Image (cartoon, rainbow, N blue to C red):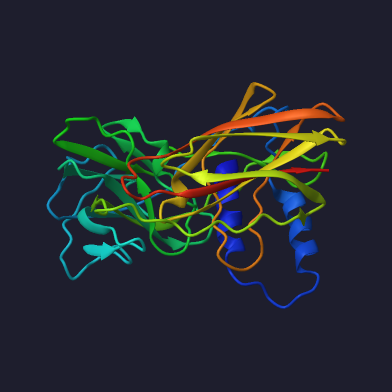
Length: 345
């Protein structure tokens, strides 16, 4: 599981209501400390190993076509009665946007490892959708458009319900594209369960993935997202120092200054809007490029979905945190409201 996968899973789990347990927060924090992949500006990247998940492929088209199967790929026709779970032909998103399915396929546990769907390009934005039958945390298929990796299309590892992500590398002027869902190309990190213990790659898990390509029609007018909830003043030993908020269609950057006595700061993001999960944040600390955050938490109810990134900074000195903000893929008339919080110890 990559660091980004872990952040997304933590946020998804945090949205569910918590049981009545006065010690719940301490238990969760303790578990996260034992297993979370620490992403620090001063620490090297985790080792990556490639793993493969076995699969069988079935495909149906409305009106796309299946590309000729390559080695290790099996394509079979699918009847309308044999519909993949949770991928309707048409649906309306929460902000009123209409979606229409162009092609659909299935990657099962045993057999072929990928499926390719060729779909027409009408000029409307394209999204991929996936549902999963398997254990939570199972590796997700990587998405390629005409052979080019599309990082904006990554989904939560075997999350609940349908997950939608944009196709952001479609060439302008193209009349059709081939979208490949591949379970054989999966970057995996490792988990260090104790402070001085080894970093061990998690055991690969398998699942059945239902995949599809949709096109959507932008709303006639911008859809205003609801306000973002305030960050907690204190959480997990951290204290909120500064925050900034804005709207994706008019606010594309932020700059905050804080003082950290401990030499540590934490950065977290919250968003609202139908496309909140597609936000990205490119961060600079004291003028030096840091990691790009490829997601944003959505906090509608329950406990705060903390997925903070910690940075080492000079002790007892002023620190300038700046950033650029954008979205993966097309977002015409579907703005996102964002908020960035900086915590100190």
